Amino acid sequence: MKVALSSLVAAGLLFAASAQAQQNVFDYPQTDDAPASFNVVNEIPAGSFTKYEINAEHGQLIVDRYVSMPVRYPANYGSITSSAGGDGDPLDALVLTRDSIYPGAVITVRAIGVLRMVDDGEADDKIIAVPTNDVDPTYADVMAIEDLPKMQAERINAFFRVYKDLPDGGDIELNGFGDASEARDILTQAFDAYQAQP
Image (cartoon, rainbow, N blue to C red; front, top):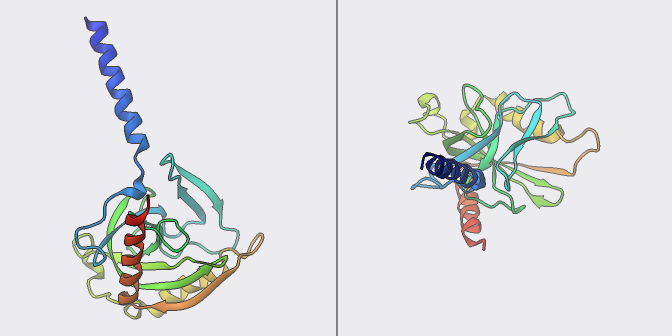
């Protein structure tokens, strides 16, 4: 009887671990008031040279590559959950925080703007966001890109202009910053595109 019970417990734990491993963090639900606030799963901590990616199929955090240019990620970089951007992948977000965010952590944020970007001919916009006030009230007065120190916006632009230059270069086109309203429109489209997927 004890052996059978132990086997059942072991099988249950194995099943639970297997089911948990199959969950896709990119399918994490959005907030009730999205796009006013929304969830981002962080992949790359601010200040990193390492480009991490979460494997959508297995949920594992992998090292995709190291940035060859002598530039670091200017903010936390992640994917907006339950979204599909112009390239079919989850929409990208840069999250400005006082401290870097651990890869795989989900944070609730609000948009302050968007960096309009085309990568290899496909729309690859970057939503610029800050934590919601209940997560960190430090950014309560930051409602737009213009509310950031000018140098911070310039660092974001400069990073994406050069981060793929080495070793082979990349076909990156930057088309300036859009405001928070434009960012929310892009978010709405990305949430709708995700819902329309089979």
